[in-house]
Length: 240
Length: 96
Image 1 (cartoon, each protein chain N blue to C red):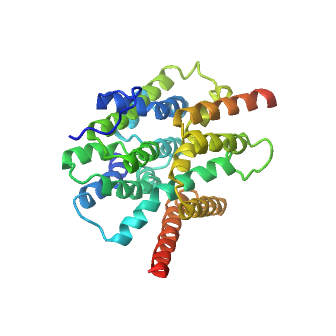
Image 2 (cartoon, rainbow over the protein chains, first blue to last red):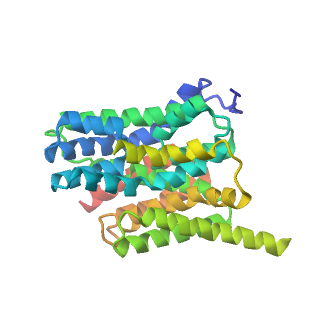
């Protein structure tokens, strides 16, 4: 495994520690959301064991919330599974976008890494992968740290469901949006990327407002990424 | 739920990681991070409570501006998270 070019003293030399440290913003965002999930599951009559199990073996924020809502409203398992699939299909695109950086990783390593691809870990990984070669241990440590905070948060929410009222006064619910702003800003390296971002954002909002509440992200991504690609290809054709 | 969550996440890794992809696909995938982050973020800023809102009480949107400036000038991920949370907390405190 090659050593990365990190020379700044604050960055730990140990790749596991580096990953752990890099995941801090995710942990900050996940803990309150996971606690909220635990509380919600408890209040909707889902047993503590089942809620923690869901966080342990599914590990998907949005679809877990939706599943709790669906189960509480009496939906059958098929409806829950189909909705989860729809909601998580966007990770197919994220995973595909990461693959060009992961050549040479073994299948078991990729399988383990894939389990931890969430919106947030994906955002962190893309940022890191554009500047240096991905370190498998560091990347897995990021995922694992995020995963632990999700499970621990869920458990805390269940254990404290009677005590915890609201995380809103502390602004904790803004941790993830703020992180996304920072990570998106880092992606905007030229005009085409800015245009792609604006198109994706606008299209996503329009689709959502039109009532397409699950497919909006994936549709907006496909359209905007195609737009960006189109511009790049058109520019290169014009200049050649 | 595990299966339908895991398969979309892992399938591209299994099938694509060892191949060299056509240039157009690589370019397209290069835009995916930007597009997907914007597509996730925009609704949370513009429709924070489920309804479209540009009003002064939409803290999610107004807090985003200084956070964006900080991200743009200083590239500090952690700083952005702290600033964003602080602004939203402060806004809620002031607005009661």
